[in-house]
Image (tube, rainbow, N blue to C red; front, side):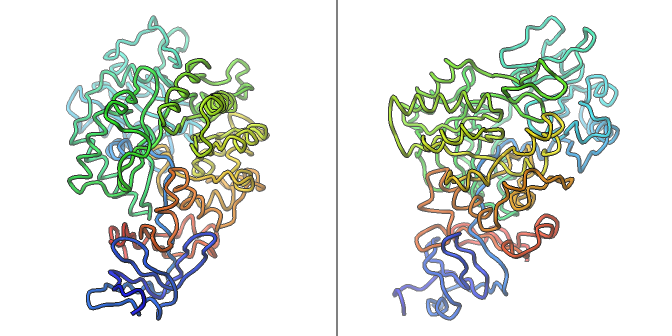
Length: 541
């Protein structure tokens, strides 16, 4: 018998896309959780023994397990229990308020009502909901309604009262408190949201583990086998690390997770992690410490991303600069010198400029040509910034679902000339910057099909074409979702392709993602089978 090994599992009669360079194989053999060999069905069946499981793919298309480069796993799991405020569930303000009122009716008086997912541009009113709207829907409950981006929330009167927020409350640095005609309107952006969140009941360890498990199983249903949790510590501080370890030990960690440590001054968990020896790279292939995350600005759709030019119709608004240059540079240098990879949030060109400069200074003082510092989102970068990223080995880490979900919002708030070229993944691919992709869930759904559709077509959900020169081929789009997702975590040697020695993380779809019409990828594709380390963990056949 070839290899002298009996495979544990053989997949036969499929179209198995192993990677952009490797191409298609008909069959694949797995041994001890990793790819043993690929080739023809006949060749792989020569590795069959008495205990070998065989799965006939019946011509279906398979890829390496998808890697979501940036989402919030715990927050996604917890938010799955919130009122669904997404445009699909609540297309009008009335429908949104009805959903909140119905939840309030089943919530004990005084209990919190949470909702998430609205986009004011897509509401029939074309505006943010207000404190008064929420008061009418739920007068007896504190309510916090969060925009899809997570950078803006609306609080009702009870929530504002519990948080001690009044018209006289000082606006926190890096925050916005909305006032209309001298009265609070409930609008809270960026750091101002923390005033309300501070008076909410903290999540228990069991709730955190439930969130990890619930969201992880949700990812598996889409063929996503790995993800980055983009701000560990954001929900419950350092105790989230404990929750992840407990989830792993109890078999309740469904997907591979790369943990990003929240590093914002005042709420950072980096010192606790450092004292515990949790440096970038610590852990194993199921649960590994990744980089350090600092927020430099907000979101474009919420008009809080830090731009160098004002937003449309608001000549005095260039967004929110979260931290001064000297603070960003000090935090980046300190973490860089300790050995951490940095994965900082920067969407507007102003924030991207601040971050690249901080990375360049840290790398000049302490060179590491393979540190792979990342710019999370990197939505409105410039050609000059791209050249500096290329020179410094800085990786763009965009979420191309944003083009599908928010592209029309970008045009609305920035105009066509600035909105359409956003998230220029084609440029990054051509420059060899190895762009990855993801969802930023719960900002967008982790559903990968709108993401793939947006990369291939550059079309929004409404059909607007956002700069067709930035389109990717289907092979490039899948490479961003697999191999380059692994590269962004320094894990390209163990996952992201289906080659001997890499983990047998595999997704099987009912549509050929290389040859299908893009519209059918968006609206007619399901993940039928997901394998993690050669074990079936999702089966919808």
